[in-house]
Image 1 (cartoon, rainbow, N blue to C red):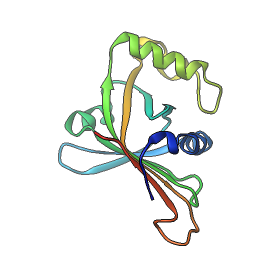
Image 2: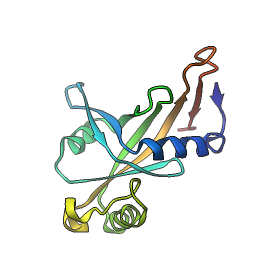
Image 3: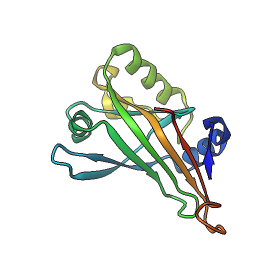
Image 4: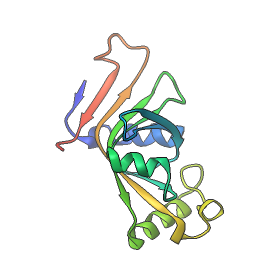
Length: 154
């Protein structure tokens, strides 16, 4: 089922991703090959943030192709898929904001970034702006009945 406004699925999206926490994130390298890894985004409405280091495969892949696909599948009967535009953010103000967001949000959604990154100066951010979010529920009478798909106007 097509959903016109993100607000119509926001509560369910938040509940599902905050229950599952970790997701598989697929990027595409400079030669057009996919690569998946497990990451821990934090969401504010329909904007997601991922804390990461510089010089990673993710950074190289996003530079070549800024589109990523996230799959939350801890519960195989209620997966969440988010196809996003990924933006590498390095300005100190945004990095500090996201550092604080992770640090001040209770676990398991938040976490202390200091043990992994040392200091905010070593902390880079990927901003996720979804162009499509798909909430799936199984079993359902049909695929149409078992899915809620929201698309942005990007």
